[in-house]
Image (tube, rainbow, N blue to C red):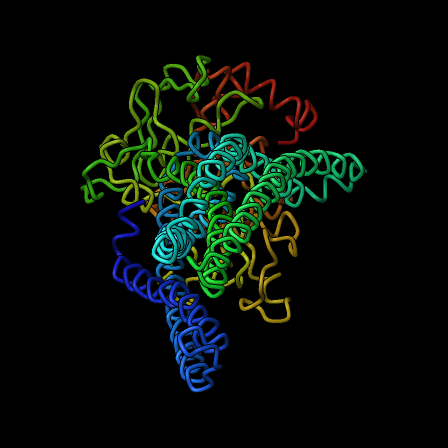
Length: 579
C-alpha cells in the first residue's frame, strides 16, 4: 500500500500537522476552564472575590483557541480527503488495468461479481482505512496520551486513577477485535456472492421471466442477503457490547475522580477547577477510546479488503507478451502445427494433434458437432488461450512470440455471443478501429447487411444502442458485430458462428459482399449450417477434437462420412438432388 500512499505523502503530512493543532487546542481548553473556575469565579487567589476581567480575558482566549482548532480541523479534513480520494483513485485504476490483462481462466477464477466488489467496495474500504488512519489514528493517539499527560500534570492522583483503568479498557478492545476480525473477510466474500447473483440475474432477466423463475431468484438473492446481514449483525453485536462496557469503565473512573477530588478539595490539596478539568480530560479520554474502537473496526475491515485488492494487483498475467510487433513479410496466413489443447485446470484434451493451414485470402470453414472443439480452435489464433502442445503460427510466427496487442491488431473476430456497448451505432462499429472514417463505417455496415436497418432508425448511425444491445434483435446485433469486425480492416477475419441469427438469404448476401469488399482478407468461418460453408474454399470437419477431413463441399460429400451425415440431417436427400 505504501507505493500509493507515498505519492500523496505531503498531503498526509499536512493533514497530520493540522490534526496536531486541533488536538492541542482541545487539550489546552480544560486548563483555561480550571483557571476561570478557580481564579475567575471562586476567586481563590483574590480573597474569594470574582474576577470578571479574568473571566472575560480567558473566555475570549478560549474562543480564539476554539476557532483556531476548527480551522485546523477543517484543513485536516481537506488534506485527508485529497490524499484518501487520490489513493483510492490510483488503486482503482491500477486494479482495472490489471484486470484488463487477465486471461479468461483468471477471470473465471476470480468471478465477475468478486472483481466488481474488489474494484468498488473493497477499494472504498481501503480508501476509508487510509483516511481514518491519517485522521483518526493521529487524533486518537494524541488525545489519549495527551489527556493522560495533562491529567498527571494537573494532579498525580487523578492521573494514577485513569492509568489503573487503562489495562481493562485495552483488554476489552483487544477481545472484541479478536472476535470480529475473521468476520470482515467473510463479509466481503458474501458481498461477492450478492454481486454475482445481481450480475447474473440482470444479464439473464429475459430467461428468468420466460421460465417464470422470478420467485426462485428472489429467494436465492434473499438467502445470500440474509447471510450477509447475519454476519454484519454479529459484528455489530460485538461492538454493541464493547461500547457500553468501555463507557461504564470510564464513568466509574469519573465517579472515583469525583470522590477523590472532593476529599482533596476538602483538605486543600486540589481545587474545584482542577477536579472539573480532570473530568474533562477523562471525558476526552473516553471519546478517544470510543473513537479508537471505531478506528480499529475500520482498520480491520480495510486490511481485510486490502488483502483482497492485493490479490488482484499481485496477479501476474498468465499470457506473457512476446517481443514481436507484427511487422512480417507475409500477411494473413494461419497455420496450426500439431496443436493439442486442454482448458487450464482440466486434463481432458479438447483438441488433439490439429494440423491446418489457411493461406492469405483463403476462406476456410470449420464444421462439426456441438462440443467438438470448433470454438476452442479459433480461440487459439488470437491467443485467448495458449496451446497445451504444438504451435499456432500467424504470418510464420508463433503467436506466443507476438506482443498480444500486435497479434490481435492483425485479427478481427466476431464471437458466438454478440457484445455491444452503450454507445452509438457509429461508435460500436468503429470500436476496433477508432480512426475509421464515416465512409468506412458505412461501407462496413453495407457489407454486413446492416445499413438498411440502421438507416431506418430515427438517428441513423448516431442512434444509441441500449445496454448489451437490448434494443436490437439478435440478427441486428450480429450484423453490427460483423460490421465492427469488417471496419477493423484486419488481415484475418474470424466468424465464430456469428451468422446463426441471420436468414439464409441475408447470410449469402453477406458472404458475397464480403468476398467482393475484402478478397485479400483471410477468412475463417465456424458454422453449424451447410448453407453457411458450402461456398468456402475449403472446409475442415472436426470430430471429437480432431480434424476428420479437409476439402471442398463436393469433395467432402463424396469422401467424408461425418460431413455427409451433417448434410443429410440438414438438407436431406431431396435437398441433395435439387442442390
